Length: 319
Image (tube, rainbow, N blue to C red):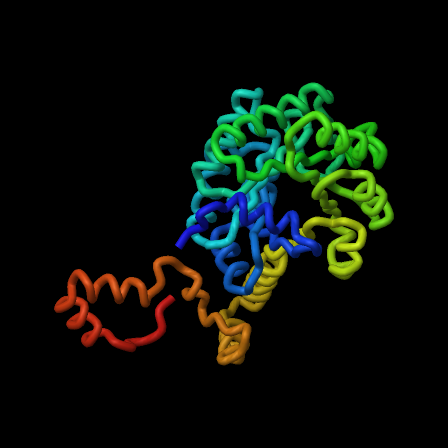
């Protein structure tokens, strides 16, 4: 199953009457887990996706590499996938190709930032911005491509105006208002705010759907409170627990020199059986499922499938 209009489904999330939680992850299985848990959309992080491939978030990955991961993620789930489009990867012509490639990959929307190349991870020192004219040109190029190829595709204008050199709250708001007035961007994304007081001021002065991201803010306001101040979505970094838990497990193993921690962890896994947290070894998220493979084999190779099943049925847990 696939979405007939990923963009339309994502627009509904941004235009919801309440703040929607948006899981932020880095690999296709994160999107599958988000869908299984009941979320309405999934965001594929640019920086964290780079980290999970062993690369720093310094703009090293090419557009085609980023789109390849996005394509695999969109194929893996039936909820809309929202992606980091960095700076659009070049001049206006390149930005238009970027939009084309993400649409072709089945992605629902992207955000494009106003950083100068080479871009830096949001919130770190040394971020510089392009001129107003260049930022507007990027966004209009993206919006023209959207209108030509898929009007439902969502273009989000991200501004790093708050944390950039010489920037601040006023600069971020100025740029956001400019982008809404001079481009066809659907949503505004403020990067790197430090307080909800700052966020409330910015959101109040920004027309249309908008949201603020800042690590110190996540989870410190309720959905009702964020809804009241106009926060369209709230990013939820779902990758962090997995990274830390895996690393803790490895450090404990290397320090002990034994694999004795695994039975204890497996006991925790088995303890989830029959509860809402029960995913076994996680194979249930893969596509095609074991049940689907079985149905296909029975349809096209009925005799062989039955013989193979009887000879190996329930031979043991696989991993």
